[in-house]
Image (cartoon, rainbow over all chains, first blue to last red; front, side):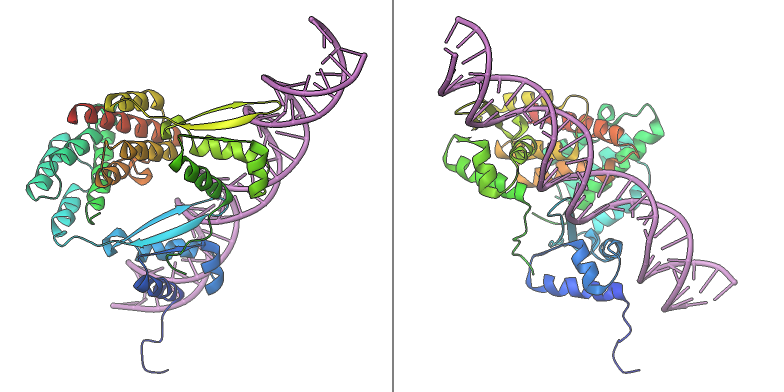
Length: 159
Length: 159
DNA sequence: ATAATAATAGTCAATATTAGTCAAAGAATG
DNA sequence: CATTCTTTGACTAATATTGACTATTATTAT
Protein backbone atom coordinates (compact mmCIF):
# COMPACT_ATOMS: atom_id res chain seq x y z
CA UNK A 1 0.00 0.00 0.00
CA UNK A 2 1.24 3.42 -0.35
CA UNK A 3 4.47 5.10 -0.42
CA UNK A 4 6.04 6.30 2.76
CA UNK A 5 6.93 4.32 5.82
CA UNK A 6 3.36 3.54 6.56
CA UNK A 7 3.91 0.38 8.53
CA UNK A 8 4.73 1.49 12.03
CA UNK A 9 3.75 -0.64 14.94
CA UNK A 10 1.93 0.82 17.92
CA UNK A 11 5.07 1.15 20.00
CA UNK A 12 6.56 3.29 17.27
CA UNK A 13 3.46 5.45 17.22
CA UNK A 14 3.59 5.97 20.94
CA UNK A 15 7.26 6.81 20.68
CA UNK A 16 6.57 9.33 17.97
CA UNK A 17 3.72 10.87 19.92
CA UNK A 18 5.88 11.41 22.98
CA UNK A 19 8.84 12.71 21.02
CA UNK A 20 6.60 15.17 19.26
CA UNK A 21 5.74 16.67 22.60
CA UNK A 22 9.38 16.60 23.60
CA UNK A 23 10.24 18.57 20.50
CA UNK A 24 8.58 21.58 22.08
CA UNK A 25 9.12 20.83 25.74
CA UNK A 26 11.99 19.84 27.95
CA UNK A 27 9.87 17.14 29.51
CA UNK A 28 6.58 15.38 29.29
CA UNK A 29 4.56 14.14 32.20
CA UNK A 30 1.98 11.49 31.51
CA UNK A 31 -0.49 9.29 33.26
CA UNK A 32 0.33 5.82 32.09
CA UNK A 33 -3.23 4.58 31.80
CA UNK A 34 -4.23 7.66 29.84
CA UNK A 35 -1.67 7.11 27.13
CA UNK A 36 -2.46 3.43 27.10
CA UNK A 37 -6.12 4.29 26.60
CA UNK A 38 -5.29 6.78 23.88
CA UNK A 39 -3.57 4.10 21.83
CA UNK A 40 -5.74 1.25 23.06
CA UNK A 41 -2.96 -0.88 24.48
CA UNK A 42 -2.37 -2.37 27.90
CA UNK A 43 -0.64 -0.01 30.33
CA UNK A 44 2.51 -2.07 30.56
CA UNK A 45 3.18 -1.42 26.91
CA UNK A 46 3.98 2.13 27.88
CA UNK A 47 6.76 0.73 30.02
CA UNK A 48 7.97 -1.28 27.08
CA UNK A 49 8.11 1.80 24.90
CA UNK A 50 9.95 3.73 27.56
CA UNK A 51 12.42 0.95 28.28
CA UNK A 52 13.28 0.41 24.65
CA UNK A 53 13.15 3.95 23.30
CA UNK A 54 13.73 6.46 26.07
CA UNK A 55 16.96 5.24 27.60
CA UNK A 56 19.78 7.36 28.91
CA UNK A 57 21.82 6.37 25.88
CA UNK A 58 19.24 8.18 23.82
CA UNK A 59 19.35 11.20 26.10
CA UNK A 60 16.30 10.71 28.23
CA UNK A 61 15.84 10.22 31.93
CA UNK A 62 12.61 8.90 33.31
CA UNK A 63 11.10 9.17 36.73
CA UNK A 64 7.74 8.16 38.06
CA UNK A 65 5.51 8.02 41.06
CA UNK A 66 2.77 5.55 41.95
CA UNK A 67 -0.38 6.08 43.94
CA UNK A 68 -3.00 8.76 43.60
CA UNK A 69 -1.87 11.45 41.22
CA UNK A 70 0.88 9.15 39.99
CA UNK A 71 2.74 9.90 36.79
CA UNK A 72 5.64 9.09 34.51
CA UNK A 73 7.89 11.94 33.53
CA UNK A 74 10.30 11.77 30.61
CA UNK A 75 12.96 14.42 30.49
CA UNK A 76 15.32 15.28 27.68
CA UNK A 77 18.90 15.80 28.80
CA UNK A 78 21.81 17.18 26.91
CA UNK A 79 24.37 14.45 26.40
CA UNK A 80 28.02 15.33 26.65
CA UNK A 81 30.14 15.33 23.56
CA UNK A 82 32.84 12.86 24.45
CA UNK A 83 30.78 10.02 25.71
CA UNK A 84 32.87 7.32 24.11
CA UNK A 85 35.03 7.24 27.22
CA UNK A 86 32.00 6.35 29.27
CA UNK A 87 30.80 3.83 26.75
CA UNK A 88 34.09 2.00 26.69
CA UNK A 89 34.40 2.08 30.48
CA UNK A 90 30.93 0.60 30.87
CA UNK A 91 31.68 -2.02 28.26
CA UNK A 92 34.92 -2.88 30.02
CA UNK A 93 33.28 -3.33 33.39
CA UNK A 94 30.88 -5.99 32.35
CA UNK A 95 29.45 -7.92 35.23
CA UNK A 96 31.97 -7.60 38.00
CA UNK A 97 34.43 -4.95 39.10
CA UNK A 98 37.35 -5.34 41.47
CA UNK A 99 38.43 -2.65 43.88
CA UNK A 100 41.64 -2.17 41.97
CA UNK A 101 39.89 -1.74 38.63
CA UNK A 102 37.39 0.63 40.15
CA UNK A 103 40.20 2.87 41.27
CA UNK A 104 41.63 2.85 37.78
CA UNK A 105 38.28 3.89 36.41
CA UNK A 106 37.94 6.77 38.82
CA UNK A 107 41.41 7.88 37.88
CA UNK A 108 40.49 7.73 34.20
CA UNK A 109 37.42 9.83 34.81
CA UNK A 110 39.51 12.38 36.61
CA UNK A 111 42.18 12.44 33.91
CA UNK A 112 39.51 13.04 31.30
CA UNK A 113 38.03 15.92 33.28
CA UNK A 114 34.76 14.08 33.68
CA UNK A 115 34.87 14.43 37.45
CA UNK A 116 36.79 16.56 39.90
CA UNK A 117 38.67 15.50 43.00
CA UNK A 118 35.74 15.84 45.31
CA UNK A 119 33.44 13.86 43.06
CA UNK A 120 36.08 11.18 42.82
CA UNK A 121 36.14 10.99 46.56
CA UNK A 122 32.39 10.63 46.76
CA UNK A 123 32.42 7.86 44.19
CA UNK A 124 35.14 5.99 46.01
CA UNK A 125 33.14 6.26 49.21
CA UNK A 126 30.11 4.82 47.47
CA UNK A 127 31.96 1.71 46.37
CA UNK A 128 34.06 1.39 49.46
CA UNK A 129 34.72 -2.22 50.37
CA UNK A 130 33.27 -1.93 53.84
CA UNK A 131 30.17 -0.13 52.63
CA UNK A 132 29.18 -2.68 50.05
CA UNK A 133 30.59 -5.78 51.70
CA UNK A 134 28.37 -8.81 51.37
CA UNK A 135 30.50 -11.54 52.93
CA UNK A 136 31.05 -12.81 49.45
CA UNK A 137 33.75 -11.49 47.18
CA UNK A 138 31.92 -12.22 43.97
CA UNK A 139 28.76 -10.52 45.14
CA UNK A 140 30.74 -7.52 46.29
CA UNK A 141 32.34 -7.20 42.87
CA UNK A 142 28.95 -7.43 41.22
CA UNK A 143 27.57 -4.76 43.50
CA UNK A 144 30.57 -2.55 42.79
CA UNK A 145 30.04 -2.98 39.07
CA UNK A 146 26.36 -2.08 39.29
CA UNK A 147 27.00 1.05 41.30
CA UNK A 148 29.82 2.18 39.07
CA UNK A 149 27.76 1.69 35.93
CA UNK A 150 24.90 3.63 37.43
CA UNK A 151 27.26 6.51 38.17
CA UNK A 152 28.87 6.37 34.74
CA UNK A 153 25.47 6.59 33.16
CA UNK A 154 24.75 9.62 35.24
CA UNK A 155 27.90 11.26 33.94
CA UNK A 156 26.63 11.05 30.39
CA UNK A 157 24.78 14.29 30.65
CA UNK A 158 25.50 17.59 32.26
CA UNK A 159 23.58 19.45 34.89
CA UNK B 1 0.45 18.56 27.39
CA UNK B 2 4.00 19.39 28.09
CA UNK B 3 5.69 21.29 30.78
CA UNK B 4 2.69 22.50 32.59
CA UNK B 5 1.92 19.98 35.25
CA UNK B 6 -1.22 20.77 37.07
CA UNK B 7 -2.13 17.35 38.34
CA UNK B 8 -0.48 16.96 41.66
CA UNK B 9 -2.12 14.87 44.28
CA UNK B 10 -3.70 16.57 47.25
CA UNK B 11 -0.92 15.63 49.64
CA UNK B 12 1.55 17.42 47.40
CA UNK B 13 -0.68 20.47 47.33
CA UNK B 14 -0.91 20.54 51.09
CA UNK B 15 2.84 20.16 51.33
CA UNK B 16 3.34 23.02 48.95
CA UNK B 17 0.89 25.22 50.79
CA UNK B 18 2.66 24.71 54.09
CA UNK B 19 6.11 25.18 52.65
CA UNK B 20 5.03 28.38 51.03
CA UNK B 21 4.18 29.74 54.43
CA UNK B 22 7.46 28.41 55.79
CA UNK B 23 9.33 30.26 53.09
CA UNK B 24 8.47 33.51 54.85
CA UNK B 25 8.21 32.29 58.42
CA UNK B 26 10.28 30.23 60.77
CA UNK B 27 7.23 28.21 61.70
CA UNK B 28 3.64 27.60 60.86
CA UNK B 29 0.93 26.80 63.37
CA UNK B 30 -2.22 25.24 62.06
CA UNK B 31 -5.47 23.79 63.24
CA UNK B 32 -5.61 20.37 61.72
CA UNK B 33 -9.30 20.36 60.91
CA UNK B 34 -9.04 23.77 59.30
CA UNK B 35 -6.41 22.70 56.80
CA UNK B 36 -8.29 19.49 56.21
CA UNK B 37 -11.40 21.54 55.44
CA UNK B 38 -9.47 23.87 53.20
CA UNK B 39 -8.39 21.00 51.00
CA UNK B 40 -11.48 18.91 51.59
CA UNK B 41 -9.74 15.87 52.99
CA UNK B 42 -10.12 13.93 56.22
CA UNK B 43 -8.09 15.35 59.11
CA UNK B 44 -5.81 12.36 59.34
CA UNK B 45 -4.48 13.13 55.90
CA UNK B 46 -2.74 16.11 57.44
CA UNK B 47 -0.86 13.67 59.62
CA UNK B 48 0.05 11.68 56.56
CA UNK B 49 1.45 14.75 54.86
CA UNK B 50 3.43 15.69 57.93
CA UNK B 51 4.77 12.21 58.50
CA UNK B 52 5.91 11.80 54.93
CA UNK B 53 7.11 15.31 54.11
CA UNK B 54 8.04 17.17 57.27
CA UNK B 55 10.41 14.81 59.00
CA UNK B 56 13.41 15.78 61.04
CA UNK B 57 15.61 14.54 58.23
CA UNK B 58 14.10 17.17 56.05
CA UNK B 59 14.81 19.82 58.64
CA UNK B 60 11.48 20.20 60.36
CA UNK B 61 10.33 19.51 63.84
CA UNK B 62 6.67 19.16 64.60
CA UNK B 63 4.88 19.60 67.86
CA UNK B 64 1.24 19.60 68.65
CA UNK B 65 -1.32 19.86 71.34
CA UNK B 66 -4.79 18.32 71.57
CA UNK B 67 -7.87 19.60 73.26
CA UNK B 68 -9.45 23.02 73.02
CA UNK B 69 -7.19 25.44 71.19
CA UNK B 70 -5.17 22.51 69.97
CA UNK B 71 -2.72 22.96 67.12
CA UNK B 72 0.07 21.50 65.07
CA UNK B 73 3.19 23.55 64.76
CA UNK B 74 5.81 22.90 62.11
CA UNK B 75 9.13 24.55 62.68
CA UNK B 76 12.12 24.85 60.41
CA UNK B 77 15.23 23.87 62.29
CA UNK B 78 18.55 25.40 61.61
CA UNK B 79 21.32 22.93 62.25
CA UNK B 80 24.37 24.44 63.85
CA UNK B 81 27.16 23.55 61.51
CA UNK B 82 28.09 21.08 58.84
CA UNK B 83 29.37 18.43 61.17
CA UNK B 84 26.15 18.55 63.13
CA UNK B 85 24.14 18.07 59.99
CA UNK B 86 26.20 15.06 59.01
CA UNK B 87 26.15 13.59 62.49
CA UNK B 88 22.44 13.91 62.88
CA UNK B 89 21.82 12.48 59.44
CA UNK B 90 24.03 9.50 60.13
CA UNK B 91 22.35 8.97 63.46
CA UNK B 92 18.95 9.11 61.85
CA UNK B 93 19.78 6.48 59.23
CA UNK B 94 20.48 3.58 61.51
CA UNK B 95 20.49 0.20 59.87
CA UNK B 96 18.16 0.54 56.90
CA UNK B 97 17.30 3.37 54.55
CA UNK B 98 14.36 3.57 52.19
CA UNK B 99 14.52 5.21 48.81
CA UNK B 100 12.23 7.94 49.96
CA UNK B 101 14.28 8.74 53.06
CA UNK B 102 17.47 8.72 51.04
CA UNK B 103 16.04 11.35 48.74
CA UNK B 104 15.12 13.45 51.73
CA UNK B 105 18.66 13.18 53.05
CA UNK B 106 20.18 14.25 49.77
CA UNK B 107 17.81 17.18 49.69
CA UNK B 108 18.90 18.17 53.17
CA UNK B 109 22.56 18.01 52.20
CA UNK B 110 21.82 20.26 49.30
CA UNK B 111 19.76 22.69 51.35
CA UNK B 112 22.62 23.00 53.80
CA UNK B 113 25.13 23.65 51.03
CA UNK B 114 27.05 20.50 51.82
CA UNK B 115 26.76 19.26 48.27
CA UNK B 116 25.86 20.81 44.95
CA UNK B 117 23.33 19.64 42.41
CA UNK B 118 25.73 17.49 40.48
CA UNK B 119 27.07 15.79 43.58
CA UNK B 120 23.51 15.16 44.65
CA UNK B 121 22.72 13.38 41.44
CA UNK B 122 25.90 11.30 41.63
CA UNK B 123 24.92 10.18 45.10
CA UNK B 124 21.42 9.35 43.93
CA UNK B 125 22.91 7.32 41.10
CA UNK B 126 25.06 5.40 43.56
CA UNK B 127 22.06 4.33 45.63
CA UNK B 128 19.68 3.89 42.75
CA UNK B 129 17.26 1.05 43.24
CA UNK B 130 18.29 -0.79 40.11
CA UNK B 131 21.97 -0.44 40.90
CA UNK B 132 21.83 -1.91 44.37
CA UNK B 133 18.94 -4.28 43.88
CA UNK B 134 19.35 -7.57 45.69
CA UNK B 135 16.02 -9.23 45.11
CA UNK B 136 15.22 -8.51 48.70
CA UNK B 137 13.81 -5.23 49.90
CA UNK B 138 15.34 -5.42 53.34
CA UNK B 139 18.78 -6.16 52.00
CA UNK B 140 18.47 -3.33 49.51
CA UNK B 141 17.60 -0.90 52.29
CA UNK B 142 20.57 -2.10 54.30
CA UNK B 143 22.88 -1.65 51.35
CA UNK B 144 21.50 1.82 50.73
CA UNK B 145 22.11 2.74 54.35
CA UNK B 146 25.69 1.49 54.23
CA UNK B 147 26.52 3.40 51.09
CA UNK B 148 24.89 6.58 52.30
CA UNK B 149 26.73 6.45 55.61
CA UNK B 150 29.99 5.86 53.83
CA UNK B 151 29.41 8.93 51.69
CA UNK B 152 28.34 11.07 54.63
CA UNK B 153 31.44 10.12 56.53
CA UNK B 154 33.53 11.05 53.55
CA UNK B 155 31.90 14.44 53.38
CA UNK B 156 32.97 15.07 56.92
CA UNK B 157 36.61 15.45 56.14
CA UNK B 158 36.22 16.31 52.53
CA UNK B 159 35.15 19.78 53.56
C1' DA C 1 -12.01 19.85 93.57
C1' DT C 2 -14.02 16.46 90.81
C1' DA C 3 -16.57 14.65 87.22
C1' DA C 4 -18.61 15.04 82.86
C1' DT C 5 -18.36 16.83 78.39
C1' DA C 6 -16.40 19.06 74.42
C1' DA C 7 -12.71 19.90 71.43
C1' DT C 8 -9.03 18.92 69.67
C1' DA C 9 -4.97 15.67 67.55
C1' DG C 10 -2.98 10.63 66.85
C1' DT C 11 -2.95 5.79 65.22
C1' DC C 12 -3.72 2.19 62.32
C1' DA C 13 -5.64 -0.64 59.12
C1' DA C 14 -8.66 -0.91 55.07
C1' DT C 15 -9.30 0.65 50.53
C1' DA C 16 -8.19 3.17 46.31
C1' DT C 17 -5.12 4.63 42.85
C1' DT C 18 -1.62 4.63 40.52
C1' DA C 19 3.04 2.41 38.16
C1' DG C 20 6.43 -1.81 37.65
C1' DT C 21 7.80 -6.64 36.58
C1' DC C 22 7.95 -10.68 34.17
C1' DA C 23 6.97 -14.30 31.35
C1' DA C 24 4.13 -16.16 27.78
C1' DA C 25 1.98 -15.60 23.33
C1' DG C 26 2.04 -13.51 18.85
C1' DA C 27 4.16 -11.07 14.92
C1' DA C 28 7.83 -9.73 12.07
C1' DT C 29 12.27 -10.38 10.22
C1' DG C 30 16.10 -12.52 8.03
C1' DC D 1 13.27 -22.17 10.68
C1' DA D 2 15.33 -19.30 14.14
C1' DT D 3 15.63 -15.17 16.20
C1' DT D 4 14.24 -10.88 17.74
C1' DC D 5 10.73 -7.51 18.59
C1' DT D 6 5.99 -6.49 20.08
C1' DT D 7 1.82 -7.19 22.58
C1' DT D 8 -0.75 -8.89 26.41
C1' DG D 9 -2.18 -9.73 31.08
C1' DA D 10 -1.61 -11.60 35.71
C1' DC D 11 0.69 -10.44 39.58
C1' DT D 12 3.43 -7.10 42.54
C1' DA D 13 4.79 -2.68 44.68
C1' DA D 14 4.38 2.02 46.06
C1' DT D 15 1.75 5.87 47.43
C1' DA D 16 -2.47 8.27 48.63
C1' DT D 17 -6.97 8.56 50.78
C1' DT D 18 -10.41 7.43 54.10
C1' DG D 19 -12.58 6.50 58.42
C1' DA D 20 -13.22 4.12 62.80
C1' DC D 21 -11.28 4.17 67.03
C1' DT D 22 -8.09 6.15 70.66
C1' DA D 23 -5.62 9.72 73.47
C1' DT D 24 -5.02 14.15 75.31
C1' DT D 25 -6.29 18.68 76.85
C1' DA D 26 -9.61 22.34 77.92
C1' DT D 27 -13.99 23.77 79.52
C1' DT D 28 -18.16 23.38 82.02
C1' DA D 29 -21.21 21.56 85.52
C1' DT D 30 -21.82 19.75 90.11
